[in-house]
Image (tube, rainbow over all chains, first blue to last red):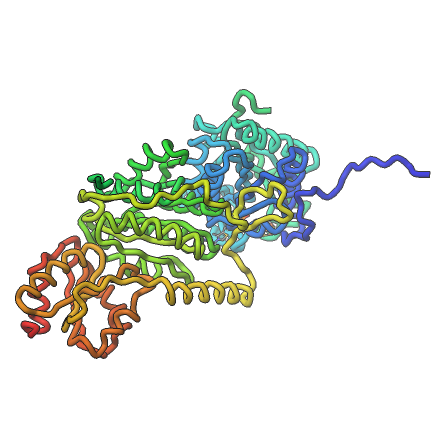
Length: 252
Length: 355
Ligand SMILES: Cc1ncc(C[n+]2csc(CCOP(=O)(O)OP(=O)(O)O)c2C)c(N)n1
Ligand code: SF4
Ligand SMILES: [Mg+2]
C-alpha cells in the first residue's frame, strides 16, 4: 500500500548535479542553490544565461544546466549587457564578488545600474578577495585583518568600506536593490524572496536589479563555519544593514 | 549609372559593416573615428540593430564579447589608446573562440600622442597586446572603398574561424572623403545562429558554456594546440597582398594602408625617371604575406620598407627575407606623413639612383 508522499526538497533541474569546490561553510553554495531553485520555480531554465565572474565562483557555470559565459574580472555587467541586447527576452544574470563588483569593476556595475536595463546581479559580499587568498576588498571592515591589511584596515591608509547596495540605489536606473544575508535559515528564506523580486524585475521588464548577499569566507577569515555565521551577524550586519533600498512600482 | 556615393571614411566603414550584416555596435568616443559610433547610433536602429555607447573601451569590448557569445555580427571601433584598453577583452574573446570585428583608426603615440595618422600600433595589432598565445586576422585597407569591401570579408572570416578580425586604418582614411560603392549586402535573415551560441537552451539538450578558463595545464595545452592549428590554417590560406608594377621590378617598396597609397605615387614618379620600382602592399598584415614576398628573392635587388612607425612592419619583412636581399627602411613617426618625393629620396639614398 503506497503512502502518499509530498516532495518538500529535491535537486533543482537547473542544478547540474555536481559537487562544488567551495570550502566547508562557504555561502557561495547557498547563493547558488537559491538561484537554481528560482530558475526552476520561475520556469526560466530554457532562457537563462548566467555570466560568471573571476573570483571563487569562477567555475559557477559548471554547476548549472543553463547556458553560461565566463567574464573577465569585473566585466560581468558589461558582458551581460551585450548578451541581453541581442536577445532581450532571455533572462540574463551576472554573479559577482566584492572585489569584482566594487573594485576592478566599479565602472561597469555603476553604468549597468544607471542604464537600468533589465539584467540581474547577484553580488556576494564576503569582505575579502576569497580566491586570491584573502586580501583586502573594498568591503573589508575597518579593523579587519586581511593578508594585505595585516594590522587591520585603517581608514587613513585604506579608506572606508563601500556600501554597494546603498550607492547604486541612489541612481534612477535600478528597479530593485536589496541587501540580504545568508547566515541563517530565516535570512536565507528572506534572501530567496528578495532574489525572486530581483528576477521578477527583469522578467517583467521593469529594470535593473541587484541583490547583495552578506556571505562568509571561513577559510580566509580563519574562523569555523559557525563562527563565520556569527561574525556576519555581530560585525558585518551593523555596517552593512539588511533591507530593500529600491523597489520600483510593479516589482513583487 | 554608378551607385557611388561620396562619404567620409569613418562613416563609410560604419555603413560597410552594416551592409556586411553587423547589427550590434558598442563603442566609446575617440578621435579620429567618432563619426563611426555617431553613424552607427542613427543607422543601426533603422535596420533593426542596436547601438550602445559604453562607459569605456573596457566596457565596449566586454559588451562585444557578450554579444559575440550570442552568435551575432558585432563590432566596435576605436583609436590607439582605446584599443589599448581593449586588449584584455580581445584576449578573452580569442581565448574563448568567438568572432567579432574591431576597427582601429590608428593615431600618433605613445600615450595620448596626437590624432594624426600613424601606423605605430602595428605590433599591438599583429603581435599581441593582450595576454596569451592568440592571433587575430588584421586587414589593412588603403582606401575607403577597399575598407568597405574588406569589412564584408572581415565578418565572413571572423565567423568562419571564430576569431577576432581587426581592420587597421588611420586618421587619413577615417577622415577623408571618397566615392564609395557598397557592392555586397548581406541579408542578416540568412545568417544562422551558431550551435555553440549562448542564447538560452530553448529545448537544446545541453547547456552551452563559453569560457576562456581551463584550469588543468594539459587541458589548456590541448586547447592552445587547437587554436594553433586554426591559426596555421589561416596563415596557409588567408594571406593577401597587392603586387603593383612588380612584373619587371628591380626594387620594391613594401608598405601598407595609407603609406602604400602614397608609395604608389612614388612608384609612378620613379618609373617616369626610368627606375624599375614596384610596390608590395600587404592587405593582410596578419597573416603576413611572407610567401608572396619571398617569391621575389632572386628577382629583386632590394626592398625599401616604408611605414608611419619605427621598424614595426620592417620586423616582419626581415623575418620573411632575412639576408636574402638588401633591406632598406624609411619611416616617420608621431603622425608625420611623408610625401612621395620624400620616399623617393629615401630610396635613392639607400639604393642610389636605382639603375
Ligand atoms: C585583471 C585581473 N586582475 C586580478 C586578477 C586576480 N584575481 C582573481 S580573483 C580576484 C579577487 C576576487 O575577489 P572577489 O571578487 O571578492 O570574489 P571572491 O573570490 O571573494 O568570491 C582577483 C584579484 C584577475 N584574475 N584578473
Ligand atoms: S576561499 Fe572563501 S569565498 Fe572562496 S570558496 Fe573558500 S570560503 Fe568560499
Ligand atoms: Mg569577495
